[in-house]
Length: 126
View 1 (cartoon, rainbow, N blue to C red):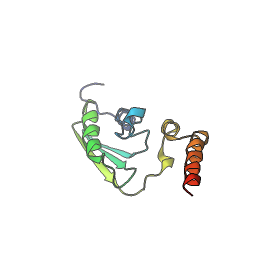
View 2 (view 1 turned 90 degrees about the vertical axis):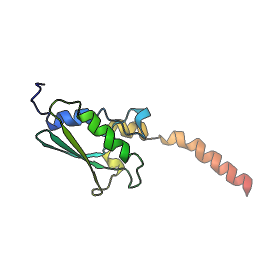
View 3 (view 1 turned 180 degrees about the vertical axis):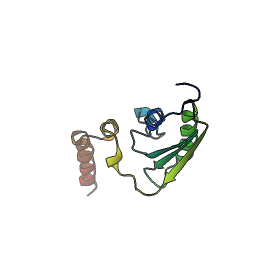
View 4 (view 1 turned 30 degrees about the vertical axis):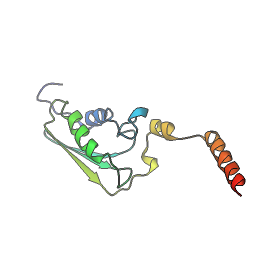
């Protein structure tokens, strides 16, 4: 990309795909995979990224407010980045990418032993 060129929305979103949600980084899930990116707004060399957090108590918002601008400033033509946290819409698991859904889902057959162990412990205590 020429030095004076500005990235488009697709380029910004692709770069955000390299910013990992701290709670899911070990699983390789980015803020895009987690469905946190609500919107990208480009005004010349300024970019605003609107985020929807998985919870209002998300302890990682400070980290994301640093890592997102750091990554986007690596793109040619981006000088200023604002991370804007939105409270509406509310994040739901429907926002997960297929990759994130697969990584974060636990099949029922994996849950059954936990349930059986809990039931056995309850029966012992009764």
